[in-house]
Image (cartoon, rainbow, N blue to C red; front, side, top):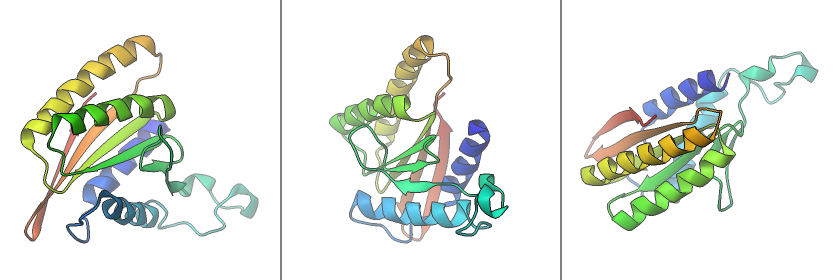
Amino acid sequence: MVETLFNDVLHTVSTWNPKAEYLTERKYRDDLLEFLQEQLNSDSTPYSSAIWGLDPLSHHFVKKEAGRSLADIAIDNEIGIELKRNLKHKSQINRLVGQVVDYLNAYSCVIIVLCGRTEREAVSILKYNLKTILKSFSSHSEEEKLVTIILKSNCNKTRKTITQTVM
């Protein structure tokens, strides 16, 4: 069930194109949050619950998270989405890796969305560090954790989407 949801969310995030090249990470988060709420719940009504006789699985709880060990966006409290704008420096990468470690305790899957101008070398370092962390995490846990990086790069009018699964 979580894997199917993860694939649906991953596909949806991959199709998202920010409405603008925002100056803050928060604006990217709000744009993606609105998009996910629309796309993941497009066939549901506000009364989607077993009480009303409708399929409760067709409605997904998409919310903005708040807290130190919570991602920017959560879907059904199973998938955490963390956005980063202009990832370039080693200190930013180290902080992100630390955040992902925390998120893996709260969520089954984590999707990292890199927006704005991201350095290629930063992505390579991030992937390497995440692979190392996931190897040690999976040896201590019975549940397999998934972490994926989606790169949203703004290049004038065209936007590239690159999806890479770390583990």
